[in-house]
Length: 164
Image (cartoon, rainbow, N blue to C red; front, side):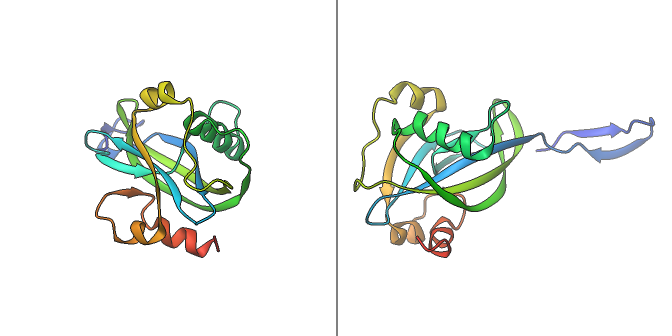
């Protein structure tokens, strides 16, 4: 839902729609040695609803996208030794954040871990704050056939196009 602003700055009633606030975000597509991707599950109420997503989140003041991506990855996994391999995509998603609808502009970065199905460590408190309900490693085949909601849409194809 977008807020309707019935009065423009000149005072005429025109039924214009206010644009949604922009939230800049960075996400990390982490692959293990068997090309499984790590996803986090959010059991949000509408409008977001339950969904799976890559680790990541909003940029803090003064942060660039790669720095935010690494910070978020550390906060959500506890891993301090993973390096970004480059940006592999971007997109927008309309979602609820902090009690309001926003247009989230995301950049996605590829990263790899050398440990198969690497567990996340010492992040229970952060998962509670971020409302992360679960995490798991997915194969590309599972991503292509799941009936669950995965953000971003078409993640398996994005990974394949990136040559991962």
